[in-house]
Each structure stands twice: as C-alpha cells, then as structure tokens.
Length: 239
Length: 259
Image (tube, rainbow over all chains, first blue to last red; front, side):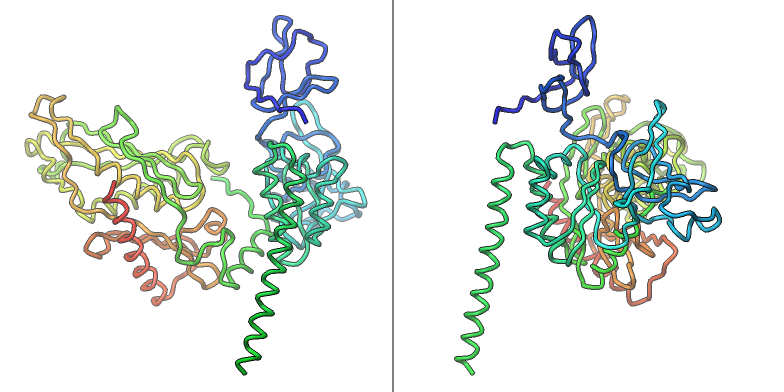
C-alpha cells in the first residue's frame, strides 16, 4: 500500500484541469485543494477530507432523526448543515396527513435514502424501499462521515468481519450514523471495534489490526473463563 | 433558542443505563470528567483562564477599568459578569443578544463570586463616590460538551486568581495583585429518573428532569445555589447534592491551589 499524502487547502495538485474532482478547485489553469485531507488519484484527482459534516449526495442511504412534523412533511435531522424533507407520499404506506405523527413521532430514528437534491441543497428523502424503515431498537453510534468507507471496507469486508465477530446487525449510514442492533454486551463490543476503526483509519493495515483486536478479545474471554473455572474448582475444594 | 431534538433511541439507552447504575461514558454517578485549566493565556487581559471539562471548552478573561460606583454603594467596586454562547459552540446557540441560558449562567457565576466575598469590593474603591475599579468578567464558550455552569465558574475564579490590577496605567500607584480571599467552586448535579448524577454530559443534561448547582467555599459554606428544569428534588436529594458538592469542590481546590 502506498503512503498516504496529507493535503492542506491551497496545495497545487495538478496542471491538468480535466481531472479536477471533489475537494478541489481550479484557478489559472491549475488544480488546487480546497480541503484538508488525503490525496486520491484514481481517474480524477480528489481530496478525501479527514473530518467534516455530512454533505448529502443523491442515492445515499442515511440515518435520520425526525425533528418536526408539518402538514405534509417530516423534517429530518440528517447530521448535516441541511435538513432532510420526507414527504408523506414517500412513507412506505399510504397514510392520512392527520395521522402523520402516529407513524413517525418527533425524536424517532429512521433509515432513509436521499431521493432528490437541488442546487439550493433542499434535500428530499424517501422511505419507499424494502430496506428503509423506522428504527425502534438497538443503538445509534455517530462517527465522522469520512470514516464510513473505512468502516465498510473493500466490498464490505470490514463491516462483515465486525458483524460476524460481534453477532450484531450493523447498518452504516453514509451520514456517519451507524445502527447497531444485538445483545447489550455485543453492541458495546461492536462500538469498541468501530471506535478503533475511527481512531486508526488513516494507518495502513487496518483490517489485520482489527482481526488481531478480535483475536485478543477472544483470548481474554478464554482466560477469564479459565480463571472462573479455577475459582469454581477452588470453591469445590474449600467445600 | 431552538433545542436540538433528542433521539429517542439514545434517550431510552441512557435511561436504561441509569437503571443499571451506569453512565454512557463509564463514569460513576459521583465522578466528574477530566479537567484541564490553563491560566494567563491572554496577554492583553489582566487575568485569563481556559477550562476544559471533558468536551466542554471555554475561556474567561478579566479586564479592569476605572469608573464611577453605583450611587447606593459609593465605597464599593463593581463586578460585571458576562457570558457569551457563540454559535460555533453548539448548533443550539444563535448569535445576537444573550439569551435566557447565557444570562442564567452569567448570573450564577457572578453570584458565586459575589456572595462568597472572594473579592472585597471595598478594597476596589479609590475615591468614595467618584472612582472605583470595575471588574469585567467575560466568559466565552468555545465548545459545549455539557455542564457549562461548572466550567464557567471554574474559569472565572481561575482567571481572577491571576489578576494584576493595572494601577500604573491609570497613574494611581504601582500595579498590585488582586487580593482573592476565597475560591468558590460550583458543582452541578442533575436528576434523571430519580437518580442523581454529578457533572452531566450534554446528553445527560438534555434528558435530565431537574438541575441543581451548588457553589461552595473554602470553609464549606455555600455561596450560591441554582435549580432549573421542570423536575424536582426531594429534601434528601438536595442535602446529598450539597454534601457531594462540598467534597468535590475541596478536591478541585487542592488541584487548583497548585496552579
């Protein structure tokens, strides 16, 4: 794996204007960085930010929190400077406008998708998909949206590793909110793992270190089991 | 001020933890977050301090000026406390004149310092009825991570401890250190589902029914109290909070005096 190059705003990235991608701007025929982050040079030249708020993109599956119910819309906090709008017709079932807050109350968490986005950043959401639904159990963990690709890993390798090791169901929203559902201890364990990813995502070899992390946790568990056995043997002797 | 909506899942989770005698960040009910205090960080101020309490971060600065006393207290100096909740600190803060929260925080900080007689206002008098020192305590919240009250009180007194009175600048003698006689320290507790939790984080503060701040002094006396929120405390709970606050403030003072 090549060394990752840290870029600060104003760095000259290229003389070729045609490859300017996200996180860059063009001035006087040169491409400059507009963000603080890591350089990425596949096809287009991009700067992947190290942190920052979520900026909605069409098609993103995200986790939102209902913050207001209006006549025909739910206004949803999507962890972004811009609010999401979920129109009544985008709810999975046909419902009456008067019953809106019976179906989704203020404070409720939903798994939703960005349906449409206009240049004024009016974000329209939808729940008309089998995967999308209100979230009523488990826990929501928030991390920086820029870390989500690392949490998912190549082809979902990282997230399926965590799912397998912790027995939790995990859904990562593009806006940095992660829904974890399972037993209480398992959720804590999964959050430990995700926190580790968040802290060490910029250091290469993350998957290996995470495997080690799970191995370590397992051996610890075994040891505590052994100790427990020892204690129970001692108890028996004492008795 | 618009309040950020509390996620119901998170609220349920926090409640369930409280029932199990646990807190989201693994602290005990009487345990506060780590505190870092830095003093004399602003060169142009007569005294200054920054306080980091967990994620909460704020800066206090003290300026002294000559002015006329209030007509009803001609032989006393004046303390003016102001607290600024800048929009950068939290999505809930708006720019503009100080809101309800900012005024409450400033007044409780002011009350703690004033009523503990930590600063003798009579010593700040130069010519009775004509000229006295005005002390401006300005607190800026940089990041709201919950429990601004304790952090603000701590920053104010830490800044006051390092104040040099700029007498030379105004041509009335040599500069001298502002005499500070007491160190009032505030400790805040919240009631969540009948349990008492010290130093609430931002989420705990949001789900709390009631909040109680107790400011206590070196001799264990109490100089300020403030209760807010729609919930209630039983008399036993108030006594308990006061006891914990006095104990906790002693610990903090020990740390403090080393500064």
